[in-house]
Length: 225
Image 1 (tube, rainbow, N blue to C red):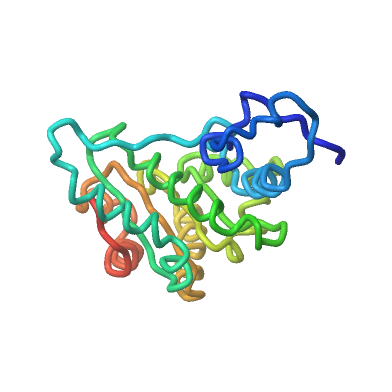
Image 2 (image 1 turned 180 degrees about the horizontal axis):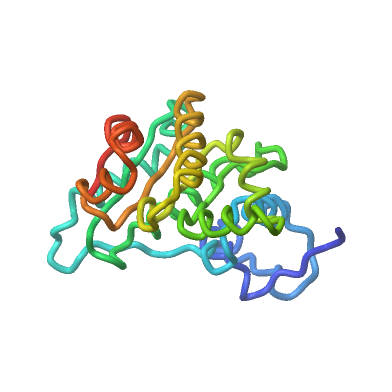
């Protein structure tokens, strides 16, 4: 694919030890960067947008009310390889929108890729699935082929981590629900790590997903509100 010219716009610069230690030759010259090449491929497979791939600083609320939750998530992030190798799951939820649930799920994917990129083969290691988008695309794919749906179906059972973002937000048809249930149940049975985010209360999520899927998510996951 040829050399890659990196610049100030490189979304990996904030977590690049070489760049942070004053070796900014990638700003000025055309070079091949193994880290960028591998991580860019893994991110392409993850379905994260370029904007979502950028490192985001996550901070405590000004009043410190989320200190316990923040520390629990930091502990998972720092030990993300062990979390994944043990097939653990995370349910991250709050009825409040925009308080960092999706950002934290992405942060955990980023942390995992940063730890494995140099020893990973070129395949789909993590997947970020917007559940409302997936269900709409799944319905449309009945009549029109969807690369998005095909990519998820092809890789979902082999990915080390799958984020199911905004699960339960969109009411699902029986067909859509059974499809989602199969994905989650199979991954759980395979010992694969799932991360779920939701804006729904526990009762609302139970009503949307049904007790069978709801119990599998809640009973098997680290629950952080």
